[in-house]
Length: 87
Image (cartoon, rainbow, N blue to C red; front, side, top):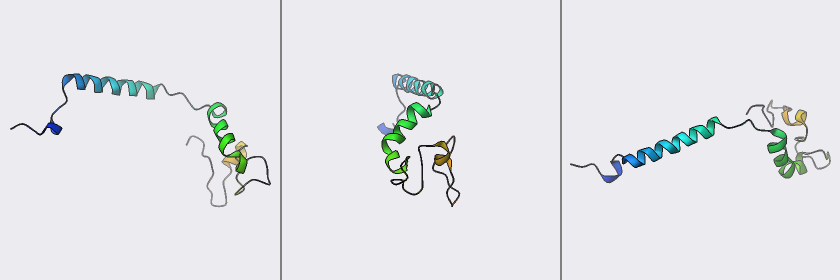
C-alpha cells in the first residue's frame, strides 16, 4: 500500500533545491554584519520617536529620552531600561 501523497518523500530535484535554499540561508545568516547604530538605528528613532522622546523637554513623554545614550539606557524606577545593549 502506498502512503498518501502528502506523506511521500520529496523527489531528488526537490531535495537538491531544498539543500541549496538552506545552504544559501545559512551563508546569509553567517555573513550578517553588526548593526551600525548611527546609520541604521538612529534614523529610525529620529523619524519615529524623537518627537515624543527627544531633546524638547516640553514635548517629552514618560521622562524617556532616546536622543542620548544616557537617556536611552537609563533604568526607570522599576529597574527596566528602554534599550538594553546587545538585545
